[in-house]
Amino acid sequence: QLVESGGGLVQPGGSLKLSCTASGVTLTDYNIGWFHQAPGKDREGVSCISMTGAGINYADSVNGRFTVSKEVRENAIYLQMNNLEPEDTAIYYCAADPGPSYVRSQCLLSQFYGSWGQGIQVTVSS
Image (cartoon, rainbow, N blue to C red; front, top):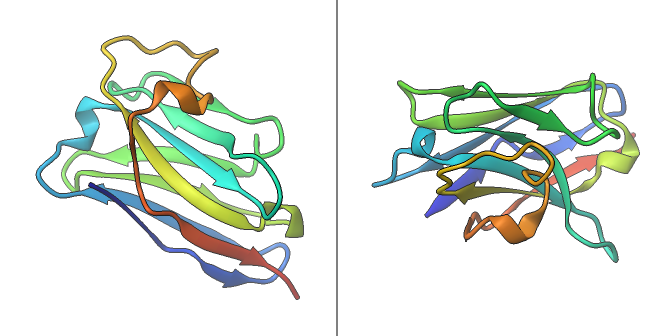
C-alpha cells in the first residue's frame, strides 16, 4: 500500500515536499507517478519517474517548479514543489506501475497505474 505525506497549507510562492512510501514493497522496482485532483476536475498527471530513475516527465503546468526524485535507501519517492500557486490546490496521489517498460508519453496517464495511495491535501492560499 502506498502512503503519501507532507501535504498541508502553504502561502502562494511557498514550498512543500511530498513523500510516497510503502511497506513490504520496494518502490524503486516500479515506475511511480504523481497525480492531483482539484475539486470538480479530473485527476491529472503531475510528474513521473521510471524505476531506474533515468526517465522523468512533468506536466507543463509544473515544469520548472516541481522536482521528482527517489531515495533508494529510504524506499521513498519525493515531489518537491516550489513556487506554489493557488491553482496547485488539490489532493495529490502517488501511484505505482510495475512496468517493465517506461514510456515517457504514457507515464502521466492514470490508466497505466494499478496501485494508488489514499491521497493527501495540498492547499495554496493566503
